[in-house]
Image 1 (cartoon, rainbow, N blue to C red):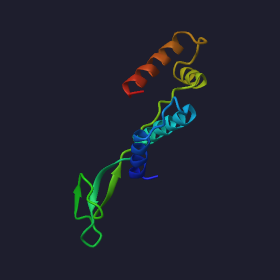
Image 2 (image 1 turned 180 degrees about the horizontal axis):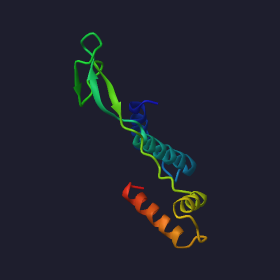
Image 3 (image 1 turned 180 degrees about the vertical axis):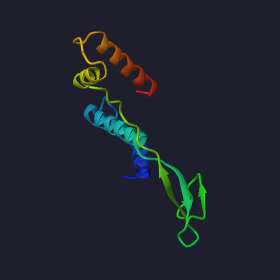
Image 4 (image 1 turned 45 degrees about the horizontal axis):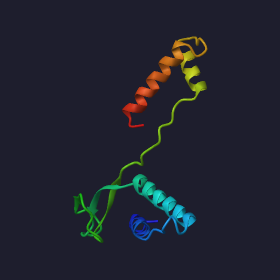
Length: 125
């Protein structure tokens, strides 16, 4: 589904929601659809620049706003990724490899998890 279609669907759903008291199941379905559309719009690749192809299909200039049908997206930003932490086994392997021993979830484990948490917070996770 294109971004434009998602925005149109979201606008239609938000403007014509069912009265929850009249039909709770339909209202719940609409709420779920609205949430799904908002999440899809947030995570979709977004163009960060466009090229103007009016001269023989070659880029004439770079622009920051689209001018259909003459411009096409040049680059897209990567999607936002969900934070993925290390498993207990991965932490143990790293501790064993870097320190040479692991005292069964002692200070080494706490230290590794503290670093992991700091990185998560620093990277918006």
